[in-house]
Amino acid sequence: MIDPKNSPETPCEGTETTESLDFIRTQVQADLNSGLNDGRVHTRFPPEPNGYLHIGHAKSILLNSGIAGEFGGKFNLRFDDTNPEKEDLEYVESIKEDMKWLGTDWEEREFYASDYFEQLYEWAQFLIREGKAYVCSLNLEQIREYRGTVKEAGRPSPDRDRTAEESLELLDGMRHGKFEEGAYTLRAKIDMAHSNMKMRDPLIYRIRKVTHHRTGNEWKIYPFYDFAHGQSDAIEGITHSICTLEFEVNRPLYEWFIANLPVPSEPRQIEFARLNLTYTIMSKRKLLQLVEQNHVNSWDDPRMPTISGLRRLGYTSESIRTFCDRIGLAKRDSTVDLDLLKWAIRSELNLTATRYMGVLRPLKVVITNYPEGKVEDIECVNNPEDESAGTRTVPFSREIYIEQDDFRIEANRKFFRLKPGKEVRLKHAYFVTCDEYIQNDDGEVVELRCTYDPESYGGQSPDGRKVKGTLHWVSAEHAVTAEVRLYDNLFREPFPEAEGHFLENLNPDSLEILTNAKLETNISEVTAENRWQFMRHGYFCLDSKDSTPEKLVINRTVTLKDSWAKLEAKTKK
Ligand code: ATP
Ligand code: MG
Image (cartoon, rainbow, N blue to C red; front, top):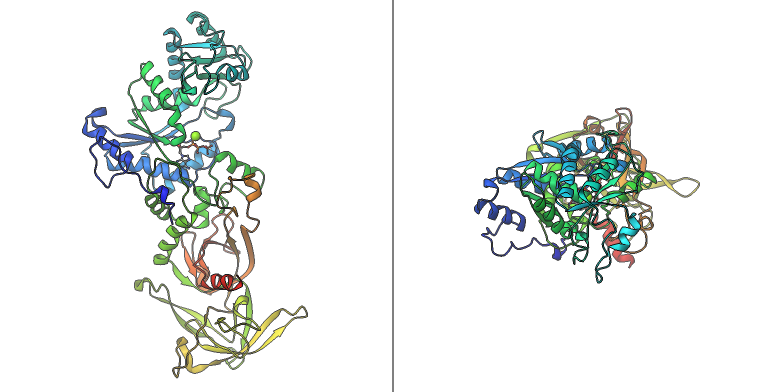
């Protein structure tokens, strides 16, 4: 199921390794062995509060907090809040909620890059005084042009040799709003011919006259990511700054700042491959677009790959941990099959979920030889995978519902469900034979008339005769009506971003709403914490947002494997 390219990497060369450790843990262990950082291990998760967390973030959270836990270290939550226009308190709150739900404990070690704005500013002044930074008056387009190309060295900014006094004064003016946005930037003075473009006098500060969700209007300049990130790590005493591969090219700059500033500690940056999933996009910018353009209903729409979406869909935090453990760590980018995520929740719920009966598209059946007014309690096994789950009773009566799909007027020999003249088993109840079907003016079958064999109680054959099909059912009189939401992949292409625009690959059938599902009466006892199976349909939960005691709204978390659909598709081919 996993892309073979994504198999866990072998440990780094030249370090003492334990075979079971991945390459990051191997590095952490080696650093401990060599006495680096006085034997401390300290990691962090550094989200930008500009969107909700997704399953890729879960991988990073579990990795960072996991390493801290395993090596007796500490773990920080640090909001990387240096882009005020995109950030919001709503995101801060949702990130914390999702991390708590995942079971991650940052022990109140909650920090913000914005807490360090003053310190970062002082370090910018320090660099200027050291002759390692200058205020530049080129605009962004000019800066890009002056930077050169991969093949050609860049040209120095005309302001590169501005005196420290002048730069300090201009920087102070920038800070206090003396200049318009874009008038100046602060840049590190490194090497305009460096083979790594990131090292060609990178930007440190820009003027931005926008309100920050924490510092308000105090600052008219904001540091760039590269200037904030490593230094924030150093301030917090982070020993291993674990990030995704796209930051590999930033590492020399990360190290340059650490080497050239009087920082209190020297974190080590280590990169790993970000999680990509088939049929999924993971960029927050694109996820925001889905929300803003109403392709989904919200960040926690159960079709979203967000933690809150998966939670609402019915995923447990345990299943997300299982998934993240399974995929391991890689140093090369690859894409994991979405089926692996589904497998994680399906295999967990197979062991824990009660089997209920629920008819999603009801067809009425009248059992003509069953006494009117009689109600029997049928004993049903709660979970065949778990004997300790016991049994429950479900009422049976003369009028029941079965699935519309479970009846066909005509069907071939392989169709083991009901057709005229055929006998099937009603799960845990009786054998019934279809005598007659009633159609409406449009030719739709609206009712079946059947007879039952009173000797087949419990669904047991009275005389050894065999019936192949077993149908689930609910008593019409006792059924609970509910809305059931069936979800499918949000995208119809395994690589939605590969060709064309990702929006063109949205799956138009990602949500089907059934408003008249008929469910066994026991369903009224479930709570938001419950997950259960509707036999033959998959695993379900209450929708935490929309469900009320008066109107149940139920989400399908994941399907069972549907052998009939597969067989039918194969036959058609
Ligand atoms: P965007 O989606 O806009 O590219 P981002 O995912 O990098 O942003 P951040 O808030 O900066 O968002 O991410 C916080 C941390 O999560 C970073 O350390 C980042 O490397 C990690 N991370 C983000 N996406 C993934 C992913 N798909 N797999 C693993 N880790 C990820
Ligand atoms: Mg980022």
